[in-house]
Image (cartoon, rainbow, N blue to C red; front, side, top):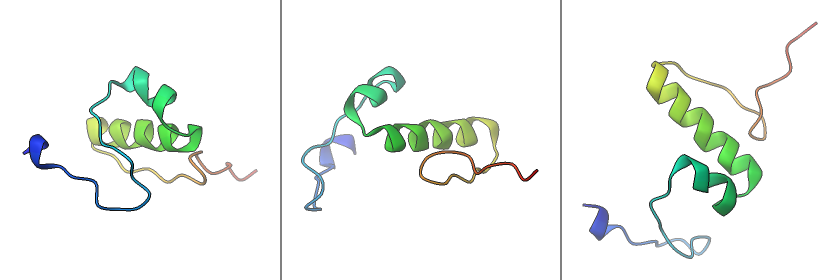
Length: 60
């Protein structure tokens, strides 16, 4: 299945399997934060909400 992945969007130049440590090296900072939040949500069975890759401010 992974061998069948083909980028088809003009915004994608390539596809690569990466470790979490590599996300920060390969992705824009806001995208790395989003991926980390997605993995955390999947691991914990929760959902999350981000604004520009950050949790929204807590109302005071």
